[in-house]
Amino acid sequence: GQNIDQPTEMTATEGAIVQINCTYQTSGFNGLFWYQQHAGEAPTFLSYNVLDGLEEKGRFSSFLSRSKGYSYLLLKELQMKDSASYLCAVVSGGYNKLIFGAGTRLAVHP
Amino acid sequence: NAGVMQNPRHLVRRRGQEARLRCSPMKGHSHVYWYRQLPEEGLKFMVYLQKENIIDESGMPKERFSAEFPKEGPSILRIQQVVRGDSAAYFCASSPRGHSGRANEQFFGPGTRLTVL
Image (cartoon, rainbow over all chains, first blue to last red; front, side):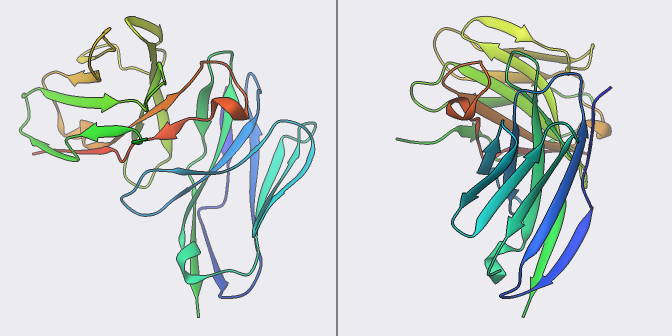
């Protein structure tokens, strides 16, 4: 079957660092995306990992371990505007189909 | 370069009516994906289309739902005889190619929020 798990909710303080974990069990794996989604809006791309290791992009970093079926998204220097849902999605199969987790709602407070 | 366009943004239908949701992919993109997001849940894959072809409809309910992507015009997701359980946000995404990889990132439209009364 296909299963992607991530925490439902997290809270953090402005200026801090937060790590959002994602574990997956899928029938195929061709990469993992992280998307940000503000309430009522479209998901927007944050990061993509297909090889093991860390990808850094400004305040956001993403890590992948294929052998463990595990990824995390690291957000540094949190800002209020980072309050959003963060979606972990695995590319499954040859047709680029995305299998999404339920998303993690992050609340950043002063 | 306009992004993925979806219309309408909000759609209200009564039980038993038909809903037609439209998606215009980004310029140069010929691959379209439809996803459904129920309240408090993640996005669920429904169907993947290329121009004039349905490639993967493994996530589509067997009845009442259909999708097309004609040679000219937008992709259409059609829901016949809607029921309250169809109330959800429907997102369309497009990519330049159908293979996996960062270069084939899917760009999402703003979604259509369907409410069935």
